Image (tube, rainbow, N blue to C red; front, side, top):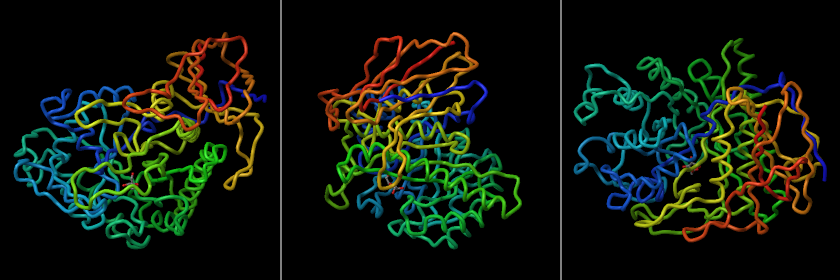
Length: 490
Ligand code: AHR
């Protein structure tokens, strides 16, 4: 099979906002307890944070982490996770049917975030709570005033404000599963009033309004239109969430699903712009794709209700999952003109690239690798390329190209980086690239992720799926069903 990419120095999509390489840690399963936090573990620091996990997170170079939920946040009292730890209440946590001990809260999480070199994207509870509590939490986190909640923070040992810039106005409020789920009208009103109060409290923050929980929600589209009609002037981003699965066990169909994601992003951007036109607004609403991943392996697993930090959503990722994760990352890069933040949901143990054994090792899943390389090399501006590739049809698209690609130009490093997946399951691909405006452009590095077995996966014992460096050849060939990164310098 043959394919072609044409790259011209003057044709770009836009600058990549590094926050598209964000992730997510929810109070869910073993994400926090025995994930990032395990006092007594041989690598635990003085606060109980696992240093082996932080080391792996640092390899991913994650600039922003969403916290504390997810569905969890809609029933959460943030005060439970502050102050004297011996006095913190244990609570019935209805979203995930477990007991929350509150050993970790914002006091500790912001300490962890510093160690993980990341910013926090904080979500407020617009389920059981509302504007006043969101404002109080914001005061606790960000204000340097001599007032009740800022003083409460000082009393808890934190003189300096935490300075959290990005805030989500609730989570998936369109979902009937959400604690205190709302109609678009109800959410639009409460999100608007919460946004106004939060921006009065700290005008420097940025706010994300909830879009639909996924593209298949029956209210998708209407929800966005109504919510934006209310919130447009007060928020900065609209969220998108989407998880993909290979329930049909059809690999070709599955690894093409990033095309569906591209359509979803472009559709939501169009809805934002429709409201912009209707309101005669200058301001553009950008997108925060703050939950994306592959999630289906763990569906149907059970645990005892109301226990503490059971293994939940512990999907074990296969090689084909890594191919789709790689394609999704290219889709985010190719939509960098609208998607300014994105979160791989989640980061540790719960549908995650990093897994831990309680009292044992931390290890990486197949999806770790395309994320690591995208985050390390996908910085700069995405090129607006012309791609010629044969295509195939699926239920969601009549035109899935066998070649999935993105091209990122890093002017500072004089580098052009091609990310590419050959989706063909049985044919290698001869790929020809033409560069215009880049003199003496030459390949210097080719990293490949390949496995014969689409269902191969890693474990604490074995790293079956791992990248290898390929020899640079005169012509470029992408192996059948492989993920690739080729670095060119000029
Ligand atoms: O990431 C797991 C869950 O998926 C989140 O809690 C929720 O927001 C989404 O439905």
